[in-house]
Image 1 (cartoon, rainbow, N blue to C red):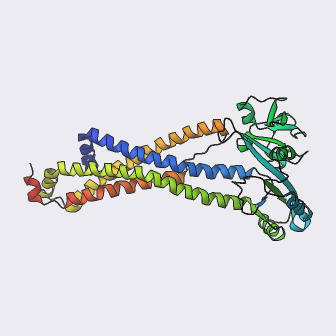
Image 2 (image 1 turned 90 degrees about the vertical axis):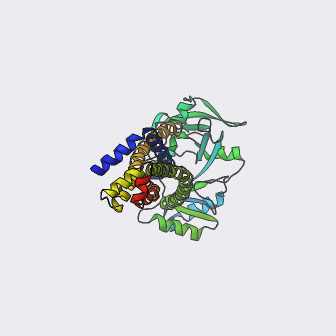
Image 3 (image 1 turned 90 degrees about the horizontal axis):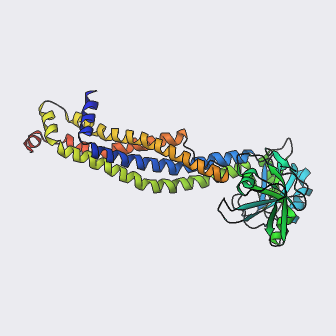
Length: 379
């Protein structure tokens, strides 16, 4: 307790410097927490989204990933081959679909059209969907609209949507909020999307697995039987997403590392200046019998205390910023894209502790090696 009292007295004796140093650690820790929270949020959001998808296998053109399908390249002949081989491959259903985005990347103006086979309900792809009003199955020139997109663009039953200069669709159904990406999608017959794109191809085909078969086995059988396709299970998609998120985590941590280094230098500067100002005090302690190890621990604990307190406050600030981000993304796209998990919080506090130890090591070493006579002779 005496050591803590000494540390508190020293920090309180120089309040402005101590507060500014603490703020440096708080800001650097909070920025790291916020940057890395996007990776945690993406993991949770992707897991939640994939858990709502009905079919267990996704068939894509070879070389195409689920998150970047691009222009439709899955030929109708390939879809027919899947249907003909369904009984042999353990397939229960084949649902080809085509995706078209209008309006760019801005969620406020983007329209995502997902074309599904005519006469089919979007519940075949997303079983959790529920109808708010109208019809759940879009007609030949009809559309079923996700709740958030309908609310954002004031779309009601009977409203007209223009898919292209020559193709117009009428809103025939509006879905209840589902809390995912499906709230921002317009479900239409695939033929109208193909007409707008000038192609007969599909973006992908969702494949259901018959009872008694495993998704991994069906995916491997599809790749072996059908040439030019890539079959991915939900697990494959999650593993691919995890690799991508880890790479982005490293990039974000590299960016936040700059702020962490600055925070560490601030702590080192504060503690080193404190050592120089207290040289006579340390010399008196040594003369009264204090060991070198005591002086070393005293200075090191001072830096560690700044790191721990700054880390805790930075964690709270980062969590508040994460909540603000989730409020904004929830309002725009219906997804929480940031998450401060226990793993992230533990990592942030560990980094703050290590930061304090590293920043305080050199000043502590310098203080502990002061010669008593020279220290007492300082003015």
